[in-house]
Image 1 (cartoon, helix red, strand yellow):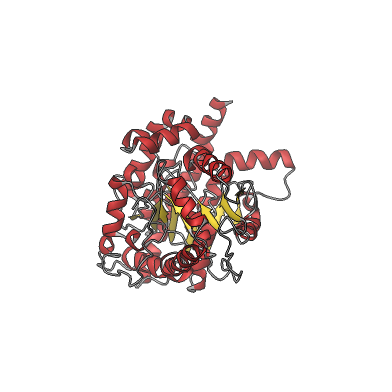
Image 2 (cartoon, rainbow, N blue to C red; image 1 turned 90 degrees about the horizontal axis):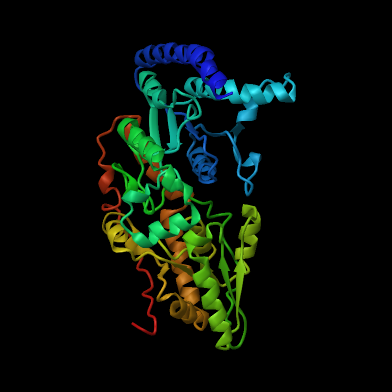
Length: 429
């Protein structure tokens, strides 16, 4: 079967790739004649990470034509979260069995041809573009360049973890616990990273993943936003202190080993055994809308305790919750405190040894929880809202599409905040 697929790709697939090349050349001629570039049309995909939905929505708010195209959908999301799916490029008149064959053999080529005609800037992750499942995956960015299109690549997770490049052994150990097979795929992942870093027009950095990248052109802590209008809460803050009432701690354990879930479970058990009224709410395999409703019922969000913070922490801060996460690893976090905006972050930084006592302090201090919640909301509005995301991507587009001479490596050095995070004092300080 594998030989038949290869023969198909080398014959019919080659003809489609030849057509793609001719189309790219034609588009190059048309775009050269066109003069000053128009406002670019944006496409995000094909990996179905929910953050591309939010980034695309943000850019639509800025009056860009912006669409998402994905090949699959994760269980916690729905097809409706994205604009186009591989199914949309499959002839409806075909029987189900023929449609499956079409998608497997021809679908990816037609998606790329469609995107090449319709869009100008392609936003990819390191695990590949629209041709990633074909033998021509390493020609995609070259076709875009011929057609005078632009490519921007971003890391999200398994696409950019190269274990041998990770100096933090605690992080490497956590990843090996959760995703041991990624170690066996290191050569493939490294090759993909090197291909995109060599050929993409722009490489976006990110706190958790930057250690594995040979190149980045901008250094946000996180590059994706949330809708701060939807992610807001008017709930009156709980004044319980674990003695006069219950304090609820939320956690989203979708990657238990990586997030350090067992540390949290043990800490909560010990606090309860010491007489504090603490309840742990584990939120997993729930749609995003349900997650928001459940988080609104909670008083503290314990996010991840190995390295950095991610979307869950942003959602918690947007709702006014104090957040616990690990933002104190020297190798990575010093870089982002100096050249990004991590020094403004009001997250309570914890590790394996400090987690329990810092959680206790938040449980017994409703005033501290409320103040950290206010600071977190202000931080998200400044750095993770649609408005801030539009501003960031506009700068990238100015550089990539309009060829402006902008130094985005110092983008955050020039925009330091007046926000002063609450200084968290544990009993050990």
